Length: 191
Image (tube, rainbow, N blue to C red; front, top):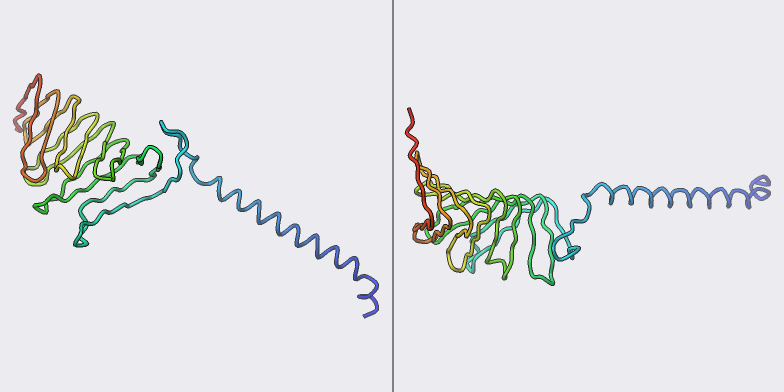
């Protein structure tokens, strides 16, 4: 006991140093955790307000039924521009006839109250019933209009036929499609 009284000041300093070291080690670990994440993305609108990683974003109708799902490894939100940018998005849409449409692209832009999605770079959409596929550089989808369109060169594939045109439109609720401008088509029979 006498030894403890004689060395109380030294023991206090040692405990204070141990606590300070533990605190500094904790701060160092937290900075390592933050640096493990991807760098903060920059967009046309500067630094995003927030970004999410490994996102599955589902929208529901008034009856609580899912009608649209967007999956992406990263989505950046820019609130001043009222848009979000998704990396390599996968979009699944359910039309009024309960058919599942699928679309992909290198990047996706969600804007105008989330009813308008733009897929850019290697954009592709597949129609479920007639089993056609469209590839283009930029693909637009507007749920409110029930419309998918592209104002850039589009390649339409169905079975053994490939058709190319300058513009494309499809209406999800009627299965109606329109390919316009400088159209050429090839038929590739299978042997």
